[in-house]
Image (cartoon, rainbow, N blue to C red; front, side, top):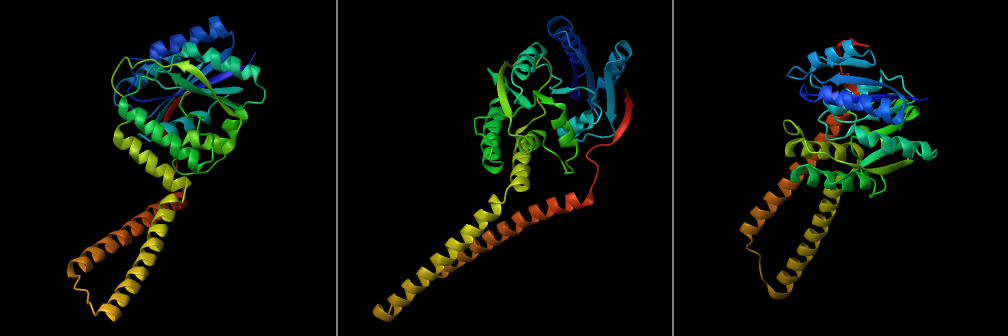
Length: 309
């Protein structure tokens, strides 16, 4: 019999935690007949989530609870939970009940059948996310497949089942603002998708706004790829070639036809255009330098305020 560690990052979920626990308990007790533990990591919720977590811990010591000192984000919260797991396998899922615990047996059975697989990631059937979230996910999947050279058909979601050694490898990766999905792809290529149901949110709304998704995409691009620098470089090369060709063209016109170039407006527009490109290039370099600075600071990815294990 194996022990499964279920890590759940919690943020403003006081209305869903008790149902989430009872459904997970039913799945492992009545369906899988396996041992489990839950690690609930409160990412500095503004509601009564931690009080509910304390209640669950008192009811069942298999529920371990951790409260972070501030809102660090989903991925650092997961990283914190990973450092407290005891199981042979680790499952991650969201706290909003959009990941049905009843779908866990599909992933567990697939892992048992495939000894050559290290990670199983849920692929949502009938995704219940908003249009902005779906578009953002598609763009992110395409971008990460190019940057990390992963299978473009492999979907990365937050509903996962991983072997313990994969989690240990992630914990040994010392990086600022880790992205768990990207770290998984960089750790193993033995990853498959398993189709699962995806439920609608029962309470509240998603914290993944367009601004959040855009920020994550820019971070992924500038952390794992030199694409922006390559684009700016290529624009500079093309601009230089065009300027040389134009200079030759105007010189030929001057010596053959005696035509001078008035071009004050053209000069102003070109000056503005090139200044804009220069500022863009400086901005891209600044983004990379900020990532280097963040890494050199070695700031903690999370700070634990309180825990009951």
